[in-house]
Length: 85
Image 1 (cartoon, one colour):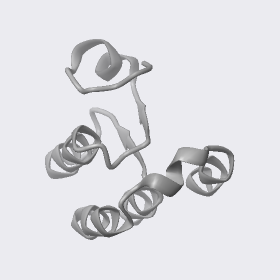
Image 2: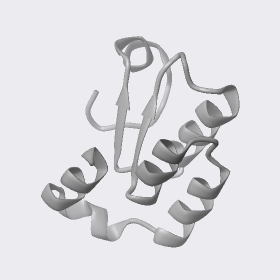
Image 3: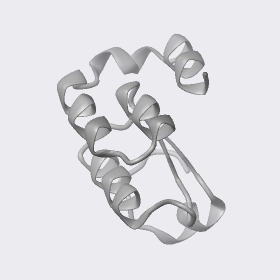
Image 4: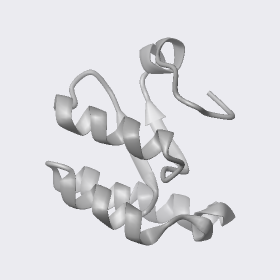
């Protein structure tokens, strides 16, 4: 539901590469992460499977994620290219 609401209120989601987002979503291990990735949104926390964590980092670093929800630990300690933290 969050992914649906964010895409309604954020205009830059229309610029995302839907083909790349679908490819990322197919690789995710959970349905919730798959749904978010298809919308250009992802989440990152210590409880994520290592493969999903790498997938989210790759999708975000490549510019395919417009909104990344993360714990404060990630925001302070991981070098990902972002405009706002």
